[in-house]
Image (cartoon, rainbow, N blue to C red; front, side, top):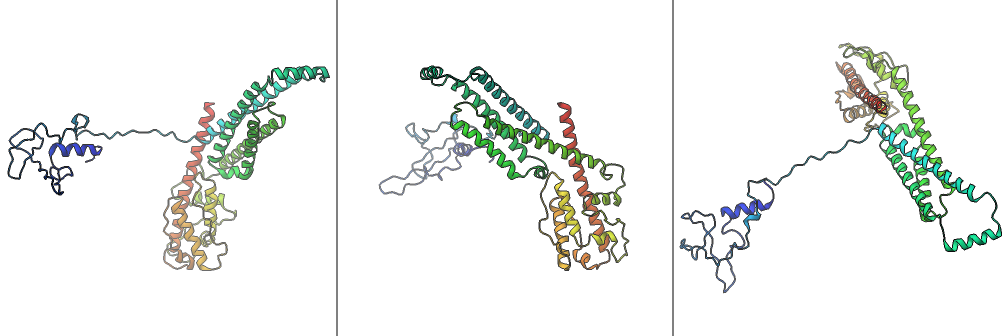
Length: 415
């Protein structure tokens, strides 16, 4: 039945006569004074699929006459056979979103065009000033200029409009590139450190207001100097913004080169590598050494005791999350005062649930056993859960950083 439209079913039912006598056209007329229509049947003695009509239930020999117009409006040439499929599968190609390097290059190109346009406008204004503004105008000159203005109201208005429209186009494209760069950045936290979102919006709206005032007066008198200063100031601010961001990115890349856990040959399940990874993002540098607990040990090791209240694990999750490209699943509500046992249990549950949502790692932790220190293998299971979480987080963060480095390197090589 998945051959296309309802027209195939109509074609099929009409040709085979399945619905003969059951449709609305062949129903009996119950109104008074009207003869009931006969039901169609199929004549097995003739090699045709068209139904034949009878006057009564016992008469099967009377064929339809040529004057019968029951199928007069039926045009079978316009109908497709039921075996023909009208389903058309088309694969639509959707281009992937551009990376940060491409967006940065587009923004820099648009800013360069705005700077060039501002320089050209100022050069033209200076040339007109030298030609017409060297000596102060005399009274007779003003009278002659007034007569010339009556004949030609504004000989420079056409040029001013072209100049203004060009400035409007290039600045609008630059604002569009800046907006896309701000909104599609992979690490918005880095941009917030340099300049707040509110300040960025205020600067963009200020430039748009200047363009609006220019267009309202129809660029009469050309572009004013204060308007050029506002546009140039915004361009210079964006250039400095990009330079500061580049400096932060280079400093972060330099810090990554010092991390021993990022590269090197390590054995599978080496807790030394995971301990170095956690120490990099921990608030305190005095994180105890990670030692392997024994199966029969009833007391936690110093490392597990430091992570027992769940507060350090929650802070580690939030700190590492800010370094990731996919910044979702932050633990926003947790207990800083862990004097009560239920608060420790809540922090551990928040941490395990965030690990499942963000890092796609399901951890098996006996929360109440960790809180009260009860259970035969509670500390060993807690140690294995921390090890599993560290390995999953470290591998994803490392993969993201390596992909970003490859994209930047390929972009620079293509310049």
